[in-house]
Length: 297
Image 1 (tube, rainbow, N blue to C red):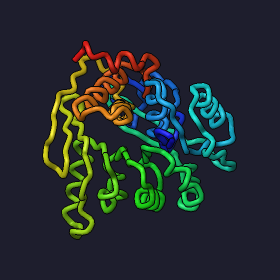
Image 2: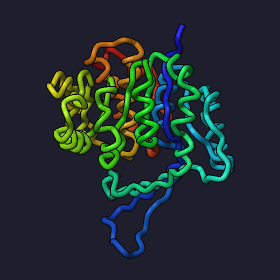
Image 3: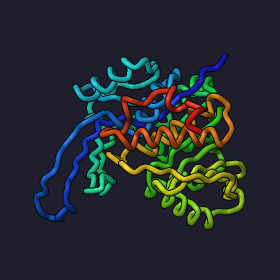
Image 4: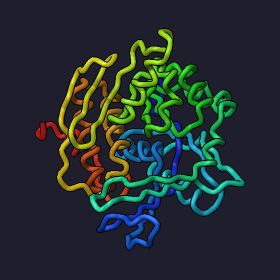
């Protein structure tokens, strides 16, 4: 029997700053600072694990204190890290999120040079292992070369999170290899704009899009035709960072159980909602029972 789900991507130490007033540029600002584990790949891994799934993770850790503490936190959750890397000579990946007075993202900064260790040669040597999984989730924080190799050579169901608008060019010519792609409204616009410049052979032939528009709306699109739409309402946002990762995690959880599209999106909405109530990019209160409770429908 094949394994269930593998996530390939980054793990970070997340540092968040929050302010109660609008930022004053080029000046000192009073804020609060917090630290937590994060990264798109890691957030998805943690969410899937908290939802009761057996999850494997291919990532890279520094050998310093930060990297090894991050690694141990995943091992403590039961995440399988047998094909991850401990890399000397680099600082662990760091993400700095600056949140505004509404607790929404104002600016994000990252130092992710260590992720380059997850290169094409590494994935070539592990492709049989990767293809032993039913679902493989690919993080768009990987290099363009690595993403291209993975999407063209993975035979399993492929799920991808676009991550950010400026990383869309890496996948614009590869969309046809992705089974499920999660984008926000801005990322979808950038992707559509770039796709219009591509030859016919690069146009997607079966990609399913999950498009989020903040708390306003979720759309499920097949070949750009709206299939399903629903509101995502959250009146008490504590921290918007990680909500998109929570959303795709809930969708994958439904995909693993062969649920209908409406149910997958409902799971996605619930995980995103729970994440929005957390100070961190993942929520320790996330659990399978709350997400799957049919009495809430």
